[in-house]
Picture: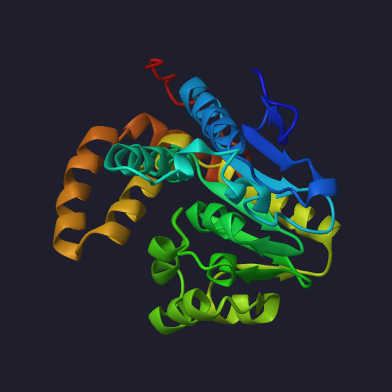
Length: 281
C-alpha cells in the first residue's frame, strides 16, 4: 500500500483490522493543499477496496489537528480552478469543487467506521473532514471553527451540510455565521464530539480502545449498520425503513450470527471473515 509521505502516515494492523491515518505536517499546522484531498480519498478507497479494514482512526501530530486549507492556495496561481472569468471556467470550477467534495465523501462512503481524534484546532477544511467521520473525539484544548467566514467565503466542502445533522440547527448556523471557536466542553454539550480527553496521549488511547471495540464486531454487521444510519440521516423514516428491508435481506447471515453469539457467550473474540474486496474502477 502506497501512502504519500508529505501529508500523512498510514498504518494497518492486519491482526485487528484497525487502520490509523496520522496527519504528519505539524510544522505547517497540518494544513491542506490541493494534493491533500485526492491523497486522502485514494488512501481511504484503497483500504475499502481491500476489505481488510474494520475501523479507521484519523489523528494528527503537533499542537493542532489541522488549520484547514493553506491560505496561499487562495492566491490563485497555485489553483487555476479559482479563475472564474468566463462561463467555461465557471463550469470547470463547479466540476473541480465537486471533485474536492467527493474526497471527503469517501469517508462517508467507506464500509468501515471512521473515528476522528482531534487535538488543538480543527479549523476550516479540517472541520469539513471531521464532520464526515462517524465519531469525533477531542482533547480538552481542542476547538472547532468554520474559519471560512473570516476570509469572506462560504464553507464549501461539507461542514454546512453535515453540521446541522450533528448539532442543533441554531448552533450550526451560529458557527457558520460567526466563525466562533467552539471549545471542547461546548462541543461535547452540543453533541459534536462523543468524548473529551485530557491530552493527546489519552485521546489516542481512547480512540484505539473504541476502535478495538468496533473491530471486534462482525464487519458485515458494522458495514450494514453504517449504511442504515447514513440512509436514515439523509432520508425520512419511511424511506429508511423501506431501504432497511432490502439491506437486511441482502446481508442477513445466520452463520455470522452463530459466531457472534458463541463468542459472546464464551466471552471470547470471534474470528469473522473480512469483507469481500472490491473491484477497482
